[in-house]
Length: 168
Image 1 (cartoon, rainbow, N blue to C red):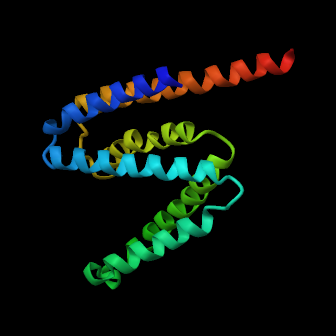
Image 2 (tube, rainbow, N blue to C red; image 1 turned 90 degrees about the horizontal axis):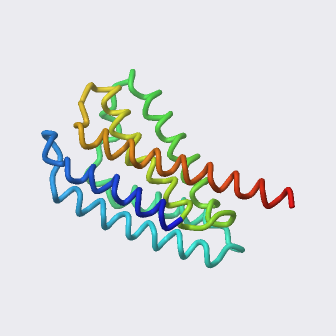
C-alpha cells in the first residue's frame, strides 16, 4: 500500500507539474484540489471508524446542503433541452458513485478507497479531451499513466496474494 501511495503521489506530482501546459490550469486549482483531497481522506477515515453506521444518508445530506449553498448562483432552467439527458445521466452517475464511495470503507480500507478514487484525476482529463477536444498536456498523460499503472499493479498484487492465502 505504501509503495502504491508513493507511486500515485509521483504520478499526481507529474500531473501538477504540468499545470502550466494548458490554458485554464494553475497553481491555485492544484492547491484547492490538494485541500479537497485532504478533506476527502479525512472523511473516508472517519467512515472507516464507524463501519456499523451507513454513510449513504450522510452523503445525500451533503449533496442537498451543497445544492442549497450554490442555488443562489445557479440557473437550473438554463440547460438546453437537448442537454437534459446528459445532465440526468451525470446525476445518475454521481448518485451511484457516491453510494459506492459511502459504503466502500465498510469493506476495504479507506486508503484503498482513496486510491481508487484517484482514477477520477486521470480519467476526467481524458473524458474532457474526448468530449470537447481539450488536450490535457503531455505531463498529464504521463502522470496519469503512472497512476493507472500503480493502481493496476497494486490491485493485481492484492488479488494474487489473497488467492495464494486462500489456497493454504
